[in-house]
Image 1 (tube, helix red, strand yellow):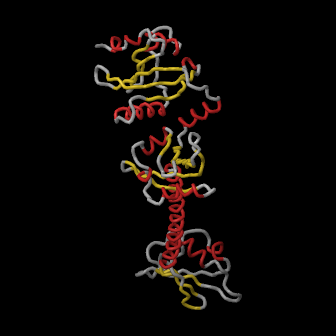
Image 2: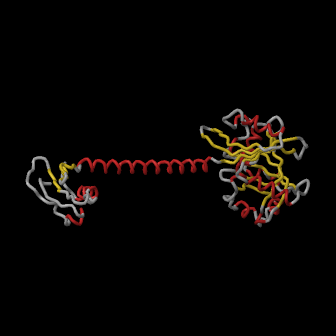
Image 3: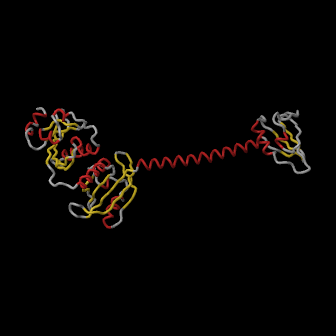
Length: 339
C-alpha cells in the first residue's frame, strides 16, 4: 500500500497532518489543512520544498524523538514548537509518531493543533535560543537526574548516559550537586571522554528552582573549550621552541667564535713580536678576527712585530689585503712564514 493510500484516512481531517522523512529531511505527504498551515499552493509545491537549510538542532531533535519511541519510553511525542512557512512564525502543539516507509525508511507522522496556552514572546524566544545554542544546558534535580537537556547537551553526551558517565573525574558530580547547599556557583574545567575522544569543558553550575515544581535544582552549563585550549597550548609550545632555538643559535655562535680564536691564536713571542700559528687558510673571516683582537694600540714607546707562520713554511709574506696601518693603527709589522 502506498503512503498516499495509507494516509487517505487523514485526507479530509481538519487537523493539519503531514509526513516527513530524514536522510535527507523532506516532506512526503500532507492533507489540505496542513497545506494551508504551511501556506502551500499545492501538494506538489509542498513536497518540492528544499529543507536542506534546516538547523542541525532540528535533526538531532528528530533522532532523539525516534529513539524514545523505538525504545518504548513514549508512544508518541507531544511538543510545542514553531514553524516558519514562508518566513511567518506559527506556534503549534505537535503530536509526532513513527511510520515505516515502503523501503524501510523512518518517517514521522505529524498532527498539529493550536498551543494549549499562548506563551509570551520572551518565553518563545528564550526557548528557541536554548534549542540552538551550542553550549550544553542541563537542568538537574537534587539526585542528579536530568530534568531537561538542550540539543547541544544531547549531541555532546547522549541522552542514555548517566550524569556520572559524562566526566572522567568521579568527583565532578558531587561538586556539581554541592551548589544546592551554597549560594556560590561552581566553576571548573572538566574532561569528558566519549567514543575514545577526549574533550575539555568549562563547567558552570548554580542553584535555581524548577519552574514546574518549585523544587531546588541545578542549572548546568558546559562549554566546549577543547579547540581554544589546544590552540593556546600550541602557541606556548611554539614560543618555547623559538626561545630554545635562539639560545641554541647564540651558543653555536659563541662556540664558533671560540673555535675561530683557537684556530688562529695570537701568541706574544717577545716584547715586539706577536706570532699567529695558523691551522688551515688565512681567509677573510680569520683575518677579520685577528684584526679585531690585535686592534688595541701598543703601549707608548713600544711597537709590535707581526709574525704569521704555517706548519712547514719559512718564507715571509704579507696578507694580500688592505694596508696594515688601517687595520692595526701604530703597530709595526714584519712578515715571517707563509699563510
